[in-house]
Image (cartoon, rainbow, N blue to C red; front, side, top):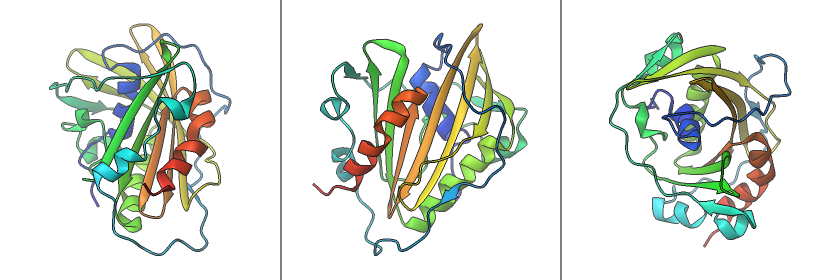
Length: 232
């Protein structure tokens, strides 16, 4: 499956930070260098294949304010940006096609997304995306873009008059679900710097992606996965 968005995951993170300007977070990463390890694969027996869930069904499985706890507020959907997006300095990403990257989501047709701020702070945000398709398509699609994003330790994304410097590296993914991927993205623009963690977990025919402040991603990943697996 070919993804139609070059930096789908990266721009999801950018939407967490507000694409027009990074928040002034000074949180630092623990790992000193990029890892070249392959994404973690739990292996073992998968649940019997079932039909993909609809976007409406996925929407019911998203985390909400009550799941996250006190101090979280759901963000309204951002206005769609019409600026062309280009990737500079990373051929693997540019090859995937940056012109449609402002969609800030993967090209799987069945999807749902929610974003939250914590205590009104723009530097403490977390978003969740759910996708559903066959296990093979989900695995191939997410691995393709994760591999492309970390194939270059640094690159730039230009959108309209904004140019954002991005650093990307793999991190150890938690041993959850059937397959796991995780990375840290560093965004720098207008003298400000912010770090976003993105962890993707495939469980059967559902892909869960949690992005945002590293501490919030770690705190809420388990409950996001648990709710995504729960039939309504």
